[in-house]
Image 1 (cartoon, rainbow, N blue to C red):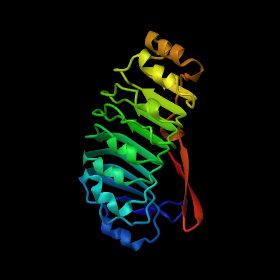
Image 2 (tube, rainbow, N blue to C red):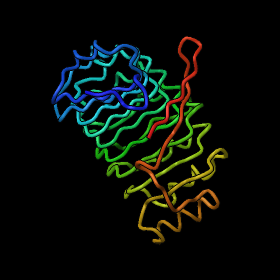
Image 3 (cartoon, helix red, strand yellow):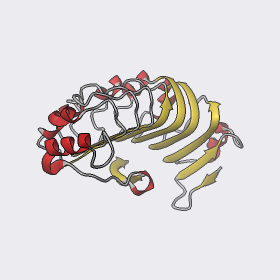
Length: 242
């Protein structure tokens, strides 16, 4: 367990070496990373001050166990397993949601309650198929879907009214014609139609449909970042998420 050098409000805890009960030694934590080592964890005792939560290799029965941190702005869940995700609807203040290789993630109906969501990334989630309608998400600017084998429907994404960036990679069930809806959204500026190899016929057909909105590259990973701003007790903070 250690504090990040960038500030004493950020903490990393490894549950293979420490226990979550040790968190009571640290007050005012806003950024927390928990490494679970593949264990099933009960997260009901997390400090209510947390705004940015990263879960690494943790199995959770239900996100209801996170009800103690309802003021979350960022939830980053990687390499885990989730039995029931419906409870995320109660986290109405989330700005950034990332799910990377989360087993059991099939749908995201809860998104309709996240009306201030700005960025969502779903990567390597083999069971994920489609988004719900995003019409109520007036702040959503960026959607990333990468290497989700069952993903095959873009129609709901085009309902987001402020959408600017759509990154799609490894979507083998999509075809070029599926990008027509997104091409017609006036706010959209950049779309990566990753439905085949670069310069393949399918990819080029999608680029023709998207016209000037089509892009052919995406850095992602450690090179990608996103900033969100929030306030606590009249003080403004900036979270840089990568």
